[in-house]
Image (tube, rainbow, N blue to C red; front, side, top):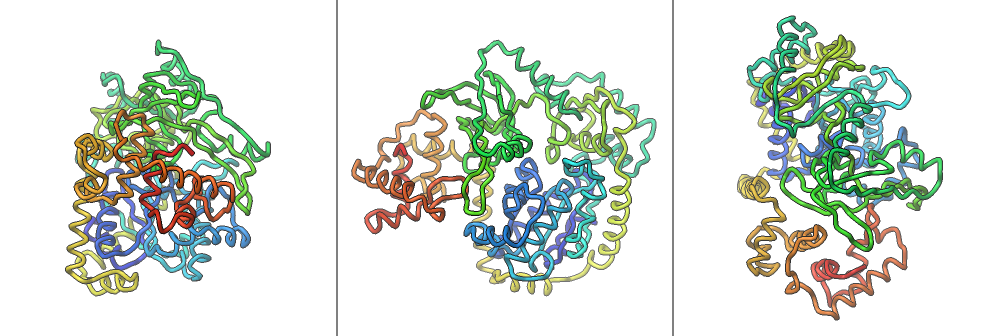
Length: 572
């Protein structure tokens, strides 16, 4: 199926499973549809099964968005408690379209729970509470990791009750954009068809002789190999090491749950020059689970050392500890795990590579233990020229038999849909869905909003990261209002940029933005009053104080932006 046909189906509001081989343009098609919806003011939630995959869609994990977290099941009491979370209730309530990328790594039980949550929150017994749900991915990618050795049949989403209830239209994209018509694309197609030729295996084996650049990603199937390589590289660095030990508090049994789920090690040893990967989502601070970088130094803050990390985007930041916690129904923390949200990343497992596109990689498939690992690893690359394959075993190029049978059926169903939709004029159905979602069909409004989206995309694609653009204007002496106008961003966003620049240790004279001592004192006093009151409604999910209760104490003398700016300079 072509992307244009898939878009034709998506715009009708049908639930859709968007699939196809690696590089077939699934993410591109989703982004086209997201742009279409946003231009018509239809609220869309963009999620993915993993943090790494979420980077490609500028979204968040489905676990965080839906509130299911790491739960295995939900009862009515838990749903009622979740419904009391205002932020969760509001974000689900406004959503008309939900996108879940990399669906293969979402457990069938978890998709059932998302269905359960949406029905409860929307008070609607239709599949997923009656909203449009688009799942995208490729079930030849690896299935979700399980703790109790479940069979893949019990893990795959397409075997879940929610999948059957949603009645997904299948859009199987067949055009190739990543590998194009090269040798690697042919090999990947042969793996998908489970008919790999002797010549293709020879091509793969010959890559072992290739010389690649030194600083490349290395993929392995086993954690033990990854650990050994990372420790060897760390030991080779001559700089002195810094040791970061996790702080664990609370119920011992619950702590074991956190220890087994948190990917930040209890003892993290870093040196300048260490390759690292973030293991927690914090979009406010500019990183998510899977962001890669390098330690470029350490800074001391409040008698504690913190690593300074340069991301591949060029952005440099000081990384503070993050906290993972398990809370009870009233929001009280029962167990918490605090650690620098990093792990070493000279080498990573094939599982953690899903969702990445790599220019070059060294891959070892000689100890492949799960069908599909070889396909996932090879499909990260654009061509054989970027591959150095150290070895492969008999399992490396095999696929799960159930996934293979399902894929054959998906191809058939997509072909049937293609016959109906390839040349069908569905404009009326498209318009009806936009009306149903409360969106706009006024041409002038759509064009105006498309211009705004284009400006936002231009800012995002600018070679200079967004913080650097703000920094340049600060150095020119512009006021916050002037920076806001020139960058076409809200003043609150510019204030947030100032806060992040300070947190990163950026050497800037920001004194001209500093409010008067009287304002600083008022905000600090009100902040401490809110802390002392300890009202759950006054705190964000990450434990930070909301602006609203401070504003209520200080209005009308101070507005929200006055408070935001003061908090940049107040030590609370």
